[in-house]
Image (tube, rainbow over all chains, first blue to last red; front, top):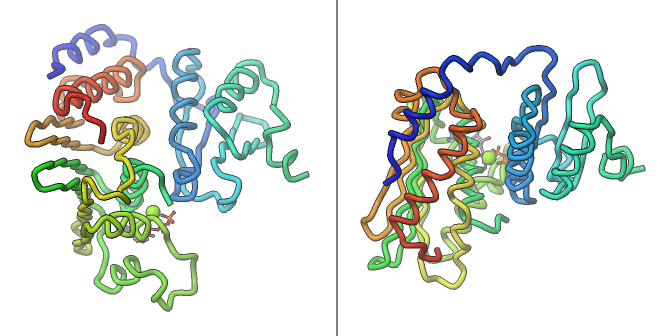
Length: 123
Length: 185
Ligand SMILES: Nc1ncnc2c1ncn2[C@@H]1O[C@H](COP(=O)(O)OP(=O)(O)OP(=O)(O)O)[C@@H](O)[C@H]1O
Ligand SMILES: [Mg+2]
């Protein structure tokens, strides 16, 4: 049985560091549609890939969250990106691999990957 | 339809979250001697009236036209019943809901359990305002994950901080392995 001692060690290490993660207005929000339609078409691994990549890249100003049905079930999994002061970007038919690209290109470098966006795919 | 039972569990738990639950209990129980895989999801959310319950379980018989019909509960029910299992919802308005699905463990139409740990990890780290009590039991060998216990140790270190998130992943993987010896379910 994995022990709670390890968890204690984590707390001791992290105490004093908390409060750094501010949910302020310069936060970028990455939102994954996780209703039945989203989950059935593969949203869970997409969400995991996004959370993992955001964590390993140390993107402290990005939060990954879930929402219900976005109303475009046939284009799930859907990922929406809300950056302060910019228009929402909607990526459709996502996969864990595409999600990783979105983190690299969009979230880190600021380049929207047009070919995955709803605007581009639907013409 | 879902491809894994663990995806149904994620979807059904999202109903509990939407119902305003503060505590969600999820139990996965494998009993080879009874040839049964049982999933129980209990919440302390808003609950449903008997009429609501009826239209949720049999959405195609409802007269409701004001909104699209939900698919989550019917999917889960169908998945269980197609394995000669059983399905039951107990709900009380104002106090909560319990959904129990029993699958025939070796039935040919049973979907794999899939990545239960990913479902639990996703639920915990994305809903840090809610408590989860997860119990996994394989032929009587069991372990639990109780976020209330974790919170007590952690103080104000959040459950979704990278270190804690990694710990939760390991906790689930190691303890499941200890309980079922890596048995493919
Ligand atoms: N645990 C619960 N507590 C309270 N109400 C619930 C619960 N589970 C289901 N319901 C009610 O039953 C309805 C149907 O649920 P169901 O999961 O089948 O569809 P849905 O969530 O509306 O849509 P989706 O197809 O995205 O799942 C919900 O909208 C909700 O009103
Ligand atoms: Mg649902």
